[in-house]
Length: 262
Image 1 (cartoon, rainbow, N blue to C red):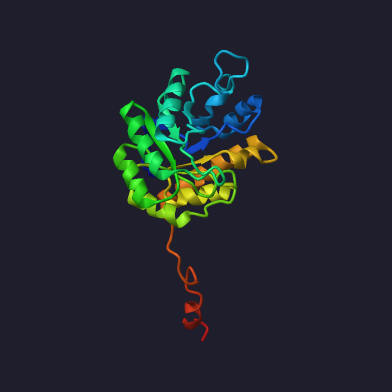
Image 2: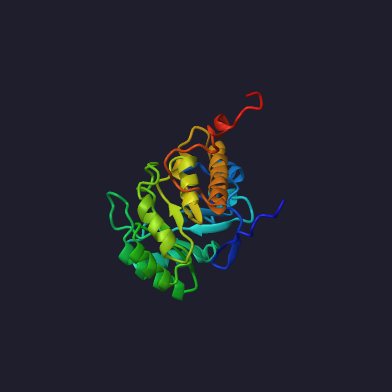
């Protein structure tokens, strides 16, 4: 049997083994370790307010060792505020990977693409691996790529909604239109939706609410991990084209063959 083709996922110069990124923002701290252990992500997102190196409740104490931390700039409304939060995260020991969230729309929590673009420029100049959360827009994704983003993270649906890939066609354009990895972030509610995103050619998916609100979060994290692997495998195998119904082999040819008894 021939060996599978190499399929490395390189992000910010680092080899990432799991294409599932898990959030940690909606669990009691002791539950985070269970969920991360079950889902086996390489990258875990976290909110800076939960990083408390001088107190008892520090999210870093509940994460398995060896994970790449992806703090976000949640709360930032401007590029400069995002830079300040990113620098704080680095000082707290979270490393150089940063998920840029610049949100000025308090009602719908949609990212401000223009201000996010400015944040990328500032953070890249300061040595960060910039991963911008964005509203799907191919033109803007290309600008973010040119500005130095290590990946782009378009939303599949409004954050926290569990509505799935409501922006699938816009994401599809981005996947085929940029060279950097595309990580589908926000809105995925079911493992099947994560699988679909991977079948489309997404490099990874990021999930938080769908796991946190499940009846059994560790089991759901495991389900998402399996779905992501299946979707990537299907993408690499090459999905068959959509066509009109037809039989997989001739059904009537044998009826026209003369019988030896005739």
